[in-house]
Amino acid sequence: MKRILSTIAVAIWALSAGMAQAAEELFIYNWTEYTPPELVAKFEAETGIKVTVDTYDSNETLLAKLQAGATGYDLVVPSQNFVPIFVSEGLIQKVNVSGMSNFKNIEERWRNPAWDPQQEYSSPWQWGTTSFSYNSENYSGKGESLKEFFEPNEEASGRVSAFQTPDEVVNLANIYLGLPFCSEDPREMKKVQDLLVAQKQHIVAYNSETMSDMLASGEAVITNHWSGFSRLGRLTGAPIVYAYPKEGVVGWYDSLVVPTSAKNVDNARKFMDFMMDPVNMAMLTVNQGYGDSIIGSSAYYTEELKSAPEVNPPADVPVVFATTCSPKAQSLIDKVWTKVMQ
Image (cartoon, rainbow, N blue to C red; front, side, top):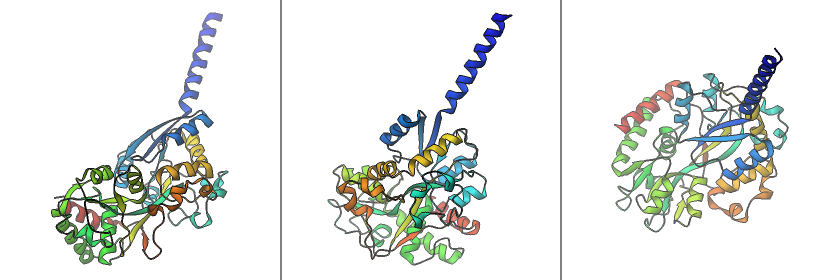
């Protein structure tokens, strides 16, 4: 009997230990090349929590994945205009971000944002802009207008790359055409559609992952780009210039949120709090070259980052932040993109 009880005790201990070990994990689903390994290593060393990172290429891909019932992710990183969609569909859960110890480090202007007014769901990651970049050795333009991207000249024709999903492409088209974001007017969206369909003859690829590689190789001379990602391409030595067209650029703000299906919520909350520490956020910002919203992080920036053009938009270039579209507006966007992709 003692042997049996001993065996049971060992089995219970082993099961408990296994469960404890499983709890010391964190699964992050983030944009491609958006999670610095050194940042993950620092979090693992400080907490003993093993981090696994998978990647996606767009907000639409992330949304579809969660809508399809994907489980196993503890943190995901949507942009601001997608957070309300995730909330309304019950895809993410409240984690009381405003009650975390490092919440005090968020700059006042970024606290309780419109997409999460009580700061119940989301904590900061990075913010930046979307425009286009060009190869300054293979293209003579200066990125002064969105016309260069949407209606390229002969020099760039056949060597333009656009994102493979509609969100930011359509918003840039709206800026170029002087139309509002999330229009519910079919006539306005027809103008966007006509522009994007006409642009298609100049497109070499619809791509949201290897834009800098395409510019460096010369396969493309103009491509949709995110500000920080463009900087990373430039720092490799490639002649990549991020454009600030006179009409404006799209602004975005990415946040950490916890899916409803998350298994390691406590560990997710620890990572969210970890990222609101200025030293840790600075590691991310220096690596990525986007903006952050944490007080004191700039003290740890490199001199290169402080003066990087991709991080410092000209004062006279409008930065227009995307909003969450109504179902009617989103349906029109989807119809436009379906037509473009035919």
